[in-house]
Amino acid sequence: MNTKAIDKRLEVRERVMLSANHSLYLIRADDQTLVLAVTPAGCQVLSSFAAREETR
Image (cartoon, rainbow, N blue to C red):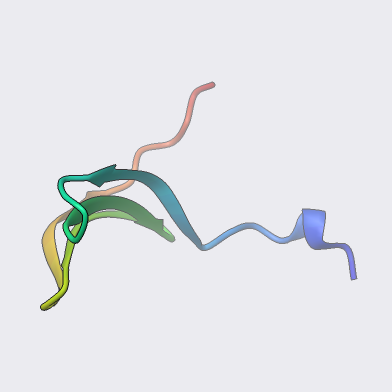
């Protein structure tokens, strides 16, 4: 199986640690971008929007 030909559908674009137990994640899932807050109590979607194409 050629894994290079498979597009990623889920990708962690960025993570910011706010404290030892709290962080924000920027996640790309298919054509959506999600901003997630992760704490010891759980995970919450703060925002979601259409993903833009990379131009690099």
